[in-house]
Image (cartoon, rainbow over all chains, first blue to last red):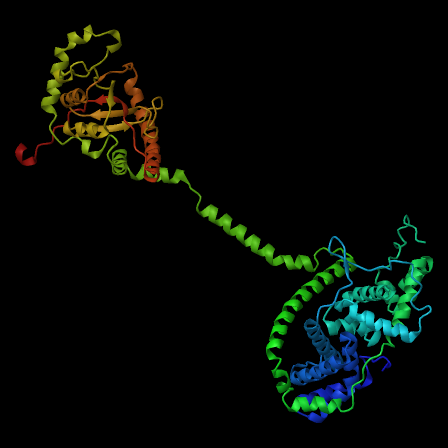
Length: 196
Length: 385
């Protein structure tokens, strides 16, 4: 199950342009190639975002269907993979609305500013004494408790190896927001991992 | 450690500083990376934070994920061919619509939050830069400056074009309208309270010969009575008809009549064929001042004037003026009075026209003028012949 990180920026993605044009023109073979190129990354992304393998597969299918329906609106101003990731994130968000709301760990200060949860006790470093497999499992669990805004950025940056700029384009937010959200997401994830 | 008193040093790095993650990701420039590295090395808490975040980043790559099963591509393409799996989603159509509405609402909220967050980030990151003089901002202000200047110019032109200039109008009125006609116009404005001196009071054309002879005769007959008058009444040369008993207002001497009704006063003037000419008196006010006294110059036959004053009633000598030099001053005073009356009449007309004001009843000083006998008309050539 554990796989190598899937990068948004891949060499095959650079050659997606002609395939997108052909697929938009009704070439099913071209669309098949596109699906084959991106299915692993999209499924992995959705699995990390929603936490459920079955739902991730369904959402991946919906993602490709949506992409097929809107191929004509793709303006080739960004990578096809980035556009596909954006569709997948939107489907994950929509699915997250359907799910039972989960408790948020986010703490809010009196002025409404979100606070970063700090460890209540002096924790040992998360890397000490933990097997990497165990740590990865705990991270997956903690991700589900992380605020969706931070989870998306952390998943795209640390699990999908997307650059800050690609994340900003995928989520349609400024790069500065990506910076702040990524650091805040990481520190919150650290706090979640330190919580028994 | 950084020295707070040294402006070249940066403040201590906070655990919330996004540069820590950027440094971990290798996105900082060399100088900034060295600064963060030094701050992290000098702060044990930051050192441990960085170690944890590095471990998290490495471990995140190992988070298990599901792989697409065999035939996933065929499943997707089959859904595409079948119309996007519409049949499979039909049962959830209603639920999807509800979710869609909810999603849109939450999405709008999320966008607002992200916008606020982005603005906060920008406010935190962007250092104010001094705009050069005449830069883009000043160029952007040009349209507004042009609009403001155009409005100011238009306002100035409007004020200049609509500026009230009374002097030329008064001059034009004086030149165009003799005093009686002007007061005739005032009558139409003043309504029931007509100003004196209307054309209706102009005496009818008649031969004053018999009346003048009668007046001279009366003057001679009453010379004894005149001597018996008090000293203050000396010089009164006007005849004293029996109808005006008790009235001592001879020619060129002011008499006082208290006017209760200008309409009645006007009617009396007309009935006796007397022409009333208003004169302004600087000491007693002008027609523009309703509370002041009027000075009228009545022109008519002595008998008619006497009858008029008697009919007007309450007439008595108000003051007497020195006989010496009176005629010499008369022309100059009349000219000054005409000018004052013209201006006052114009102002009065404006005030009454605009404000609907009315002249109040008041006291009238009357200066009597006995017209000279008209020159005998030249006989026609035929009659002389």
